[in-house]
Length: 502
Image (cartoon, rainbow, N blue to C red; front, side, top):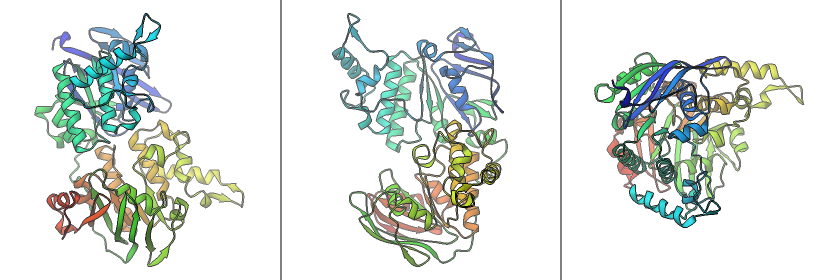
């Protein structure tokens, strides 16, 4: 392979943190003008590798060859000056500033090196948006745009900065199907401009569709390098986890008990209307629907996170009043939100603190004291049982990978006395192996008689794990299906607003 065909080459990059070997002699080659996939389970080292390329971390050893030049490490400014741009899952933008201002942030155009040249900045922004066929107002505050549109602006910013390498970290995790197709259109356009991309995703079907080549990581090392046209998804999964996953959805059947939770006529104006359903002990109830169907809003209303206009909630046949999350917890309901970073965790607190936060009452020693030793033992056992990759329970939650953060959120609720579990997008942003672990945890819950509500945008996940599925469309239930009637056609009909029951 000729040297000038490669934009990036990593040679035996090693990075250690206290108690963790994050990168162990990692070597990788990325050709000019290709889309290079990077996959691996949470904790495999992908995030650390990105931060090395972005200049946020300096490797302990190894060399980086970029565009024909050798570097021991980068600073953030050096990485940007060389043409390396990172588009993170949590976009680094200023919400109240305009689209134009965000694109030129840190590189403002000036007249005579004194005054901002707003007119020229706006014109260049319009030209960029037109080039990518994006109908976005350059004067609009970027915070008013949806995630998909904001992501497109971030790509435009990278292109305008003459980026040679754009790294996209889980770019489709929060996008609708339509937005994902638009992103792929932009990616293809960037390829034609000879822009090189590293595409990181847990959605292997997308990796297969959009990438030219692939690097697979496991436990801080590179375990495989593949050309996408010649490798199967099953092979990639095996390489990621180190063994075959025979059953993508390890569904187990358990005896269905009496009704655990029943809701009647739950409504909140403009969000959801007349929601009625029940879920039994030992049952997984899937909640499907398209983005904006009102599923999360319904769950927030049910658990007291948002107020209801009307409706009744029954637990074990008895009517309960839930006006706050505290009421929900006392009623035995656990709500695992889809937004783990803003609503599920306190990122500046430890794993130990987060995993025991909901049930501190159980760790009291006498009336006014907390048994810190008992808390540490309980959290350590949960970390071990759930295979959370962390140096110690004292590690801050914000320092963990996305998948391990999700496991801490689940651990927090497993320590309570909850009998009803609402999982909102339980496997979003989680790798294949960790998904299996989450599904097995759900199986364990229902085997002990818990009732589980699983809200998921992945239709095959609902079909793979649920005993029964209800489908929502524009805030209403438009379909209900038992397991033997699960078909993609039935669910899509209902998700599109055509009422179906089977």
